[in-house]
Length: 474
Ligand SMILES: [Zn+2]
Image (cartoon, rainbow, N blue to C red; front, side):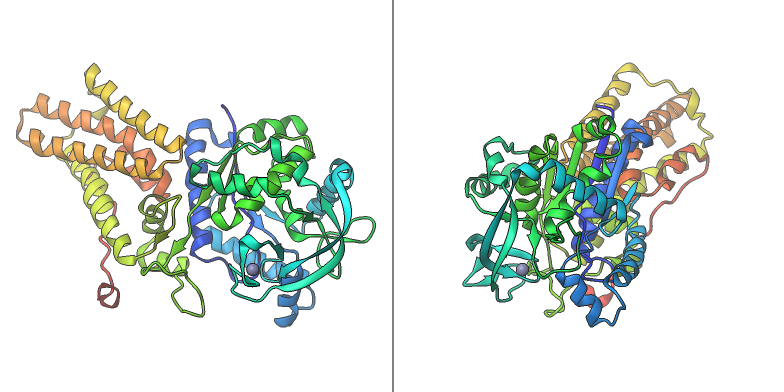
């Protein structure tokens, strides 16, 4: 493999000021994965796509509620805030995709009017509709006529619409989920036929087809992934990217990402997404769903102001569970940071650089014995393998064990008490291990000072202790 295309879902711009902790989780996970592949494959061989989903009834309602001249004005304002938001999270995206860009509209029309046209049928469609989701709901995603996600009443809606015959591709759908715990649910979704409307009546804010109908926001937005990978720009280049594509999304998106979009790909004659990473949901400290009305929302930007970006990134990528739901607790964030980063890695770097400094160790001229060199190489490969399987729980475990071993070696062998040549040798061997270990931390924490420390001939203190506010401790 020599290329990697990574994409998050495009958040819906119903908050003009930026995202919540769930968005931060998905963006930061995607970014850590992208940084890893950039390190392995070179920058030019990795593309990270993020962006915004800007059409639909709810957005035009929001724009007029807030007194904007036009929905486009609202989206432009929101997009600039979201760009600031992702910048604060340290996201290094290659594409910031906006579904109101004219190129997107052109590509979407071409996709539906040329490539998918044989699979489109007209139908009088009746169903229960959730305005919040901008989606028709089936029995499985509603209870007694209430939307599971929004807790609002569904409205009966009958429209003459165009539908895409996704069910025709059901038998060809392959399970590309990284974590197989949702495989059964996906199987059930794929096995149940339903109409998938791709146009909406009486909705103006969206991409228009040539017959004047408006594309349904979901159908239109999903196709951004392939356009970002160059589907209509250069098909050979697209194929290279798409061969190694990774899509991230939350569980509530399983049906759209792992089935509907995959069927669209097959209908267009493209390959399915290579891998789909469906992550868990972040709950509050008491395992309750976060909501503005309850007032238990964790703001990622406030977390960065309090604890720093590195601490937030470490907690989200390695501290929380990737695939099952997990509860966000500042006490836990602080504990993990102080133990694993400050006390583990930070301590190891400080001690090693201190010894290098104090004893003027000539690092470049220490030759590691074969068994130590291959021991370190094996450790590095283990972490890489865990990373490449997106098993972040394992990454954390392996890194902590490795750091622990190296700290223990300093304690046990006490290089500071030895004669010069033995001392140089041991410090040099530990430094060798650090050079293999530190890039992983630099990627996750997004902190290049970790790598700079290895060049230093002076003692380096990298991290600060997190002291919790008394209100949080209590
Ligand atoms: Zn809903």
